[in-house]
Image 1: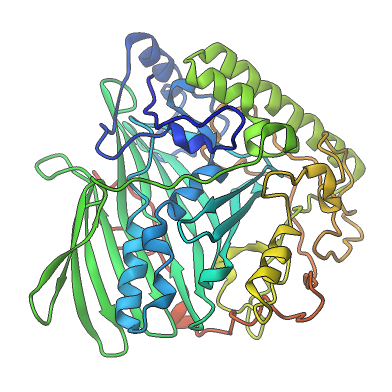
Image 2: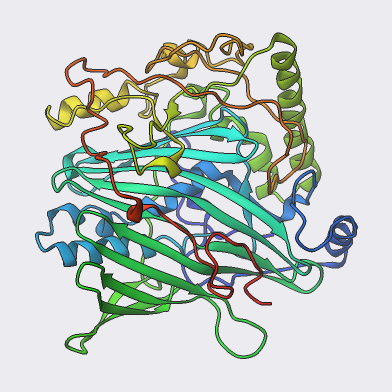
Length: 515
C-alpha cells in the first residue's frame, strides 16, 4: 500500500510519524487483492457475527505505521482551532469553538482502511508542538491497561490555559462483512482561566467489506460534547451510508442550551470536507470548519537514541519501517518478537505474584464525595499535580519533570522510568501488599500480553494482570498538593457521559449501523 506523505524534515531533526499521513480528500478505500483476500477469508472462517476480535492474527497491510498513542494527537493537530478557545468571552461562542476544534481532527488519516498499532502495556509516547506565537503544547501518553486496552493521555498548553485528560477504550466486534471498534472512554478538556470542563466522547469506527472488494472506512453513531458549568451540549451524529442512497462521511447534529431547553445551532456537512453551522434563531448559516483546505500541524518528538525502549517510535521502529516498505513478512516477524517478549514478562510477573502499575498515570479518585467525582470514565489520570497558581514557566517545568518530552531529555535521566532506557525487569507491587505511589516514585514495570496477534482488536478475557489503584499524587512543586483537583469539582449525575447508538437508539449498545 502506498501511504500519503508530507514534506520531509532533515534526518537530524525530530519529527512525528504522523507526517506520513495523507492530505484531506484522499480516498478512504483499500483494495483487497486476491492474496490478501485469501488471508482475510482464512481468518473470517474462524469467526461468527458478534464475536470479539481477540486472539486473531490479521495481515499487516491494514496496519498504520504508528501506535494508537500517537494517533490520538490528531485531536491537537489544528492549533488555529485549539489555542483561541479560552480567550473567547461569550460562553456560547466559546462552546461553538470547542465543537469546531473537536470536528477538525477526523480528516487526518492514511489512505484506505488502516488501524494503528495496538500499544503494549507500559508503552509510552510523548511529543510537543511549537506554535506560531512561540508557545508550546505538551503531550504525555501511556498504555495503562491491555485487557481491556486503555490508552491514557495528558495534554497541556500552559500559556493558553488549556489542559486535556483522556482515556481511550476501544471495544471491537466482527459483524459479518464489517469490523467495528466502539470507541469508549472520554476526554475532559479544561479551560483553566474559565473554570470550565468539556466532556467529549468519540464516534464508533467501521471497516466495511473486509472479505472481498474495496474495504471502506466509516465513522458512525452519536458522540457528545458537554459542558456542565454552562449547560451547553452538542449531540453530533456521524452518519454511515447504509445500503441504499446517502453519502459517506456525513455529519450532523445540534448544539443545545440544556438550561433553556432549546436548540441553538444545527450542524451539517462532511467530516472529511466542509462542515456548516446554522443559527436556528436567525437562520444564518456559516462554515464551521473546512477540512478540504486544512493543513495539520504535526507534533515533534525526540530522536530515537534519546527514547527509552518502551517509547512508541523506538519500540515499533523496525515494524513501522517494514510497513512503509510493504514488507509484510518483516513487519509480522518484528511485531511477533515484541509480542513474544510481552508473554515472557507476563509469565515472570505471574510467578512472582506481582501486579502491574502504570508508570505515569494513577487511578481517578471518583465516586460519591471523591475529589474527582464525575470523572470516573477517565479511569486513569496523570500521576502529578500541576500548580496553576504559579507562572507559565514554572508550570512548564512541572510538566517536563513528569517524563522526557523535549530533545535533550533522555529516558535514562528519569528515575520514574527506571533510570534506564533498557528493558526493565518485573518490580511491580506485590498482590498482597500494594504500596501507595506518587509521581516519579514508581519504577517502570514490564508490559503484559497473552496474545501475539498482529492487531489486538479486543480484550483477552480472563487475564490475571489487573492494574491496582494508586494513592494520591504529590505536587512536583510542593506548593499546592491539590493542584490537580482544583478544576475537578464534584459534578452531578446528570453530567455522566453516556453513549447512544444512532440506529438502535439504545445507550451504550453496539450494533452494526448498516443493518
